[in-house]
Length: 237
Ligand code: BTN
Image (cartoon, rainbow, N blue to C red; front, top):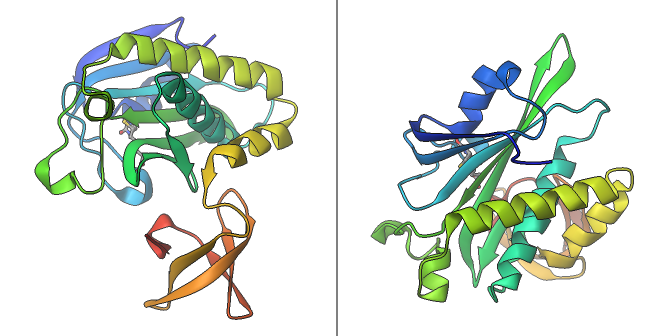
């Protein structure tokens, strides 16, 4: 189960960092939730603003068999989108694993592995979902919260519980069929294969057609030349 063991901290630097330091004291499936983070981390070395009111938490896995890190990230992105859709929020996954609503970011996921002597001993999936927190003025064009979309506050514990239950069901049902997890992920993914989009390549913005989507590279045909997009910063709205 996910979340049977739960540690709630009023304030911590980052729930991912906390679990990296303390993973030995927790069981597989344990979660650490913070009311606020003082040094929340985003992907690619960015920081993650985490005031009171949001859902900031990390899940610990201690896998006995090797499962790719991307699989965990995908499972949570699918679970979060499906839980939000039950609340009538038409969320989608923006490649590779951000959760968006109407062009604005609602949730980010940061998965990390802890290795000892080249063996993965812990997987930490960190989830940051804007729920009842206020989005600062300077981020209002790019980020949104559940409260802003529904125009009312939502119980954070309900979201936490539903996401964990749903992610667990996906993990148990599909852990040996990761191609089905990828299929499900692609259902909610934007862009899709065949879409025309703008990408930044060599500091130039060019139009291209998405040929193939992989976990960490988007192959785009730009005037007959295939380029690999490696970060969402290369995608232009
Ligand atoms: C991103 O989109 O860049 C990923 C953001 C992940 C934020 C969450 S909040 C809980 C956990 N602790 C962290 O420091 N980061 C993740």
